[in-house]
Length: 119
Image (cartoon, rainbow, N blue to C red; front, side, top):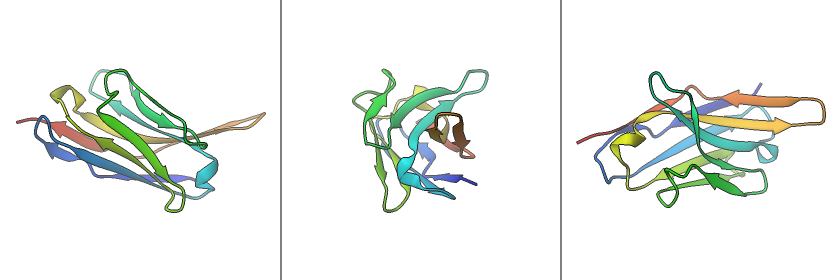
């Protein structure tokens, strides 16, 4: 069974930086597409950034130019480097892994890590 464990969240001042990490275990990391989502109370979970098994990336418009997603297949880890953080980036951030076959889709979530941007 796939497990995802996030770390790196915390409290940071506006304009600061954080790097989130998500360690993957239980299957072959390199064949999964990976993503970071975030959620605030009363709102739907939203995609922040994603990276395919081949390394292609996409970002939410709100974080383009500030956040960078990357993956290290040797360490089975995906990262989210967050720079120029704003108060509106405050949320619980979730790691996601996804793989689709002809007949099935496999989707897994981490437990989430809190990011708070405040002075």
